[in-house]
Image (cartoon, rainbow, N blue to C red):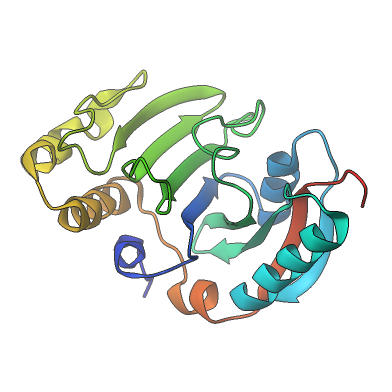
Length: 210
């Protein structure tokens, strides 16, 4: 029995919101390497969410810089996952690093800057083999109702059928949208591990003056 991803809308993954990358076709270690892009990730062992948040905060304080980004990562079903911590807002949004979805990998990004004063909507995006396949705002009221990408038809019928464009309640639209992409792409994320468990962690950005 898998947890799916709809639970994300009802949970506080971090006080900032969430940046979650799911991948099909590559293992967790390769996902972390690709997220680190031009650098080599530093493995941090097993960490709970609270432990990793303390590590990032202390590291940035000691370095007098606020640029550390780390991930907690693992595997569930046929998916690798990575949950960001640290200063990911504005750094890990739709700007998927070159090569993240290369060699046939399927990459799914769930992103929500909950503390952004502009109150942007949570977003979903899907990349495959270097191409942006589809994506949309998971709260469309007062935001964009456009489903973008080269294959918007992957989700457009379900999004319109669920009434997402006209849904005025952000939390309701958020949960409905997660349910749609969960079903369409068979996505899941282990709830207890992410919220309370100790899982593998790695530093992926923030190396200067280390």
